[in-house]
Picture 1 (spheres, rainbow, N blue to C red):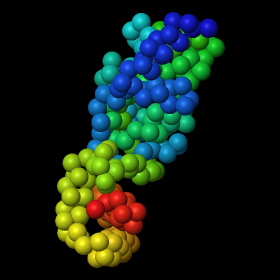
Picture 2 (cartoon, rainbow, N blue to C red):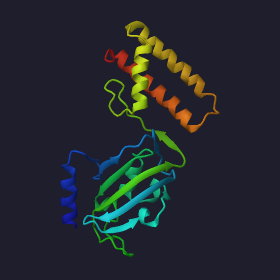
Picture 3 (cartoon, helix red, strand yellow):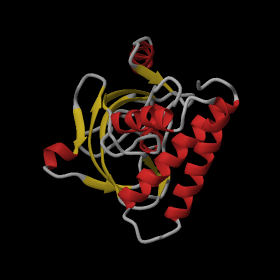
Picture 4 (cartoon, rainbow, N blue to C red):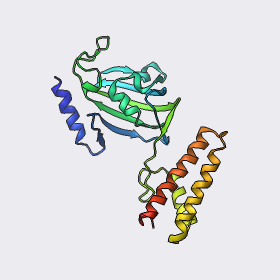
Length: 217
């Protein structure tokens, strides 16, 4: 087995900016995108990527080909697939991938080779999700954690607009959710526009939950 790879992954896990998932995949966010959707397992995605061994030897790269490639999460190695389904457009991550989530006991025999049982490092840049999407929002309306600038502005304005009075606050938010939901039924809006409707409804629902739990105000 790949002792150097295991040691490398364990070292990475100790770093503050590296997230370790239950599967054993580790990743670091290099650039945070503004997208609000994840791809589904079978959704084609336009991505830039580079794969290296832990010593930095590159074994594949779209950057050196000069153009991004289209892959769906169900057509790539497990570690890559798991990461892609957690990413949004504009994200660029570095993945520290254990052998069992990469090329496993067989490695890659074609040149340039990946030895058997090797941990590998990928950089993946999610340029475009070209099909079915799932909403990917984790924005916390109370602390504003994980919210982008557009969401933060909306939340602050909505809290002001819907009043600090405890009794009318929840009612006003409920009415606004209803109003937005009716408008999304129109059907002939762009993906971007629909995404912003979905986002606002999501944020208002969070605010409503928090206000009912007496936390928001």
